[in-house]
Length: 59
Image (cartoon, rainbow, N blue to C red; front, side):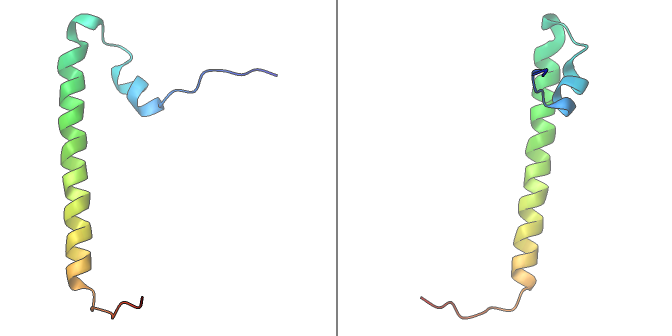
């Protein structure tokens, strides 16, 4: 039975071709993209919650 290493394919596909010299700027750009995506998701969640009718919470 073969046990290979598991990699996050999107990450390695996006950054696998970069060498150390130019890896950091690309990684920082990727972080900015992820932060923006997270902000978009948080905004969507907030808007969905605002549009939902309030329900009484039971303890």
